[in-house]
Image 1 (spheres, rainbow, N blue to C red):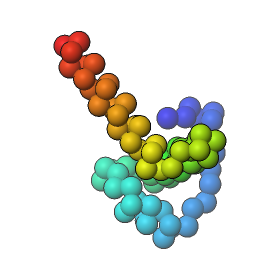
Image 2 (tube, one colour; image 1 turned 30 degrees about the vertical axis):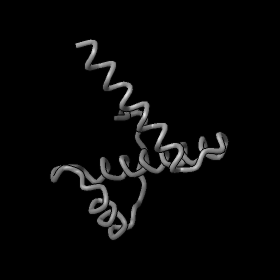
Image 3 (cartoon, helix red, strand yellow; image 1 turned 135 degrees about the vertical axis):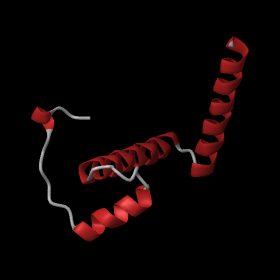
Image 4 (cartoon, rainbow, N blue to C red; image 1 turned 90 degrees about the vertical axis):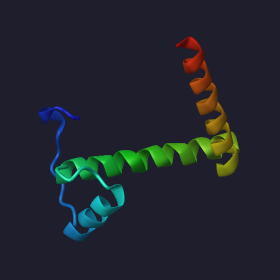
Length: 82
């Protein structure tokens, strides 16, 4: 989380924030600022993925296949190290 010096105040439509809260399904006690921050981080991560796919020339399916292969390889390494 950002330090108090790094914080900015923004106005967000209450209906949009409620819709975001429903979509993100945060913990019941999550503050509105936490919900908005998670949504922005999700959006930025999604944009980074889309940009990397555009640069790399991979389709979404191919990127998911590679990601799954890497995840399984990581889990195999973790199991063999234990």
